[in-house]
Image (cartoon, rainbow, N blue to C red):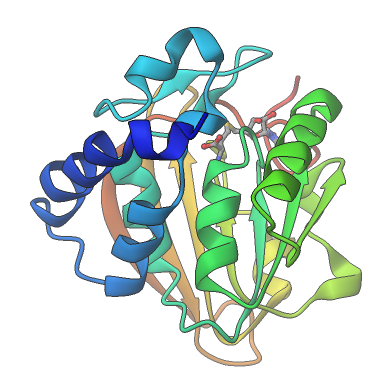
Length: 220
Ligand code: SAH
């Protein structure tokens, strides 16, 4: 059975109406979203909603992000294909697959082991061998692999963890939702020099993510 084909039309329509129509212009992001079978990353019972304009629940009270938010955050990473990037909050692995298309190497951290295992399985099935997944508290970053050209956090943080800025290369981008437990502002920070306080800060708009839980996030 070729599930990919069954959903191809829905996926192309999703990209047209939710992604292109809302101003996402990075052609590499658009191509990645046209290619990756989002329906394989959602619960089987929700497969017919996989291309809806909304987030969906995944296991363990977490969510797979809305397609538009995935595109917006991916575009903000400004990737050309040569970068080493870090993702915090693997979740379903859908955003991870998008990053695997856009960057050279992806390091992804998930605190819930069962989610990491399921994501790993799907990424293997789709031949994404340029992804390393680790189970743990991503608010510490991944020091052994730093510096990163870009870091994406896909859970809502109370504050920007300084340790993540320290793991950015000069010129690197950090894309992170910051704010309260119920709503956040999607922030893009660009590290301008060796001084981690020398940052360009941009507000990409309001959003709503599940909690970033950990040492430099919310308490469990
Ligand atoms: N990009 C994912 C988002 C999943 S929801 C997707 O679209 O499927 C956010 C994820 O972040 C959850 O799986 C949650 O368990 C994880 N998370 C929360 N705090 C974390 C932390 N400190 N380190 C790593 N992962 C974390």
